[in-house]
Amino acid sequence: MSRIVGVIPSRWGSTRFPGKSLALISGKPMVQWVVERVKQAEKLDAVIVATDDPRIADCIRSLEIPDVQVAMTRADHPSGTDRIAEAVQSLEVDAVINVQGDEPLIDPNLIDELAEVISSKDWDMATAATPITDEEQINDPSVVKALFNRHGQALYFSRSTIPHIREPQNVPTSGIYWRHIGIYAYRRDYLLRLVQEPVCQLENLEKLEQLRALDMGCRMKVIKTEDFGIGVDTPADVAKAEKLLAQL
Image 1: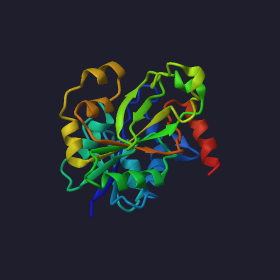
Image 2: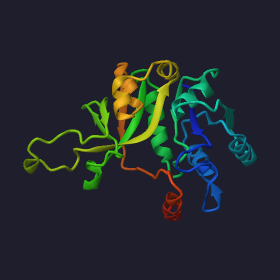
Image 3: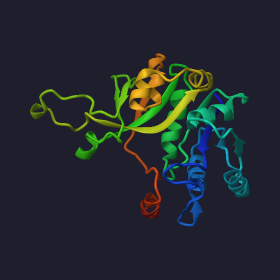
């Protein structure tokens, strides 16, 4: 049986929202919401919050939630992926699920689906995508589009509108465009290999880290999901998150 851990990278120095991990959402720090949602997943052996800030570490420890640990990491990591790699490099685990620290409504069932996929050695990584139903998002470069084949294997990710429809008058857009959701599962050894690779040209051009994995020849499974949740990127997103949480 595979041993799988969920890791939540949580740093203080967000450019758009410094300290957002401890921003209160309906009376609780955001990172607490994320931890509690991840704990609802059934296929994780442990949950680790990987942080570089003692304030976040103290918050997590004060919650005293069973099987939730804190890993103190370096402050100079260029990405959350590098942070979780440091957190698990000395652990005897088979796979890792990277749950963004600003997703207070992450679906525990999606985490379990990713855990199921990555427990097989058929895939190096797994991620998720949801149908784009808003026409404006199709041409929005902040909305990353995912392309995958009939087996669900990732082909490409882009900020551009892909696929390009040459004769749009003859093709309905429903079911054509998929929005990438930034949650990842990795085989542990593949994750440690990934962070040692230099940035590739496509990653540098699109500013999408997952393109480094594809450039390496990664076997990456894309899970289809209807759930998108909400990422809290700015102070204005707090009210949106509170509204959605009130509906649960």
